[in-house]
Length: 467
Image (cartoon, rainbow, N blue to C red):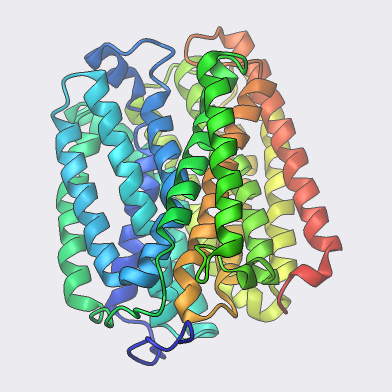
């Protein structure tokens, strides 16, 4: 049976309430990545985290999300998109409730890992629901723009919301706020989305391939997060590298023999998906790493509290949302390749503009040109890459295609932040102000160079884009 045979209904030709629910789900995923940044000092003090271990409040979420995304994507295709959407929302609600009442570092890290698994199920289910609910073309592009505005804007809005919540209610509020939202998502998903069709028994889940891929990717992401801070030659780093490599080699061998592989070979030859996968890695390595450095600048150099730091991210969130909305008409007018090139190039110019503005006595006003440019580039590139990832992919493969691109997004973020922090001489909360300023400027220069090279690569490789 073909990948499309089990699809129950034709794609919708107009937007409706469902896209709002899907956008809200994407907002939750993005918020859970960034909302804890401004809460980290209070979490560390309240639960007794050491300075070295505090980063795992963020990293535990990244590691589990990146490791389980392929599994989540295939589960959406074979076990049902609505079913995975509701299950993932429930995981978010339960883990967030536990997180709000956590009394020890171990419990909170377990909660963050559970939220990451929820994200790995929710992200591909949400994206594949968009790509199968709405007809390919202008309607789907508008739906992706709304979804993209929620996702990209959430990376910035999370810092704002986190600052407001921590200032008013303390760090547990950044977890408890998820509970009613996630429960509402589970209920609305059950009511609004069509029932999943009966499972096609001719298609196999490829459980062995899923386990090998999940184990390998989880260990790789763990290595990329752990090793830069603790050392590449430490026993945990060497063990993660060795076992992760074994899992990935095993996964490759399994996929070659599997009658219904976890990652169908046809998808690896899909030009739009290959382009989106590469851009997703670069996007997360650069744009998604910026809040980390800006938070250090606002809180440690300028001495802003959590609330003031959160307010500083309001404008970027608004501009990113505007950039995502400009994506669909820009794709229609200029084409996918030009929009990606323009978004990456604009981001590179914005990062360069931030370099001289990051100063010990600099004003927020001096940061605005760079912030506006990099946020516009971020918004337009975000929408374009997901349009590229979905275009021309069969409905029955939308989940795993989303998983491939989003796995690249997560691994790119882990690699990018690790490399940028290393290039910035390992700066963190305990660094002196002069060291922070030098490190942040270096990170911005590296970020600008990477985005410029990405724009050049997309410009040169005309064959990789859809018209």
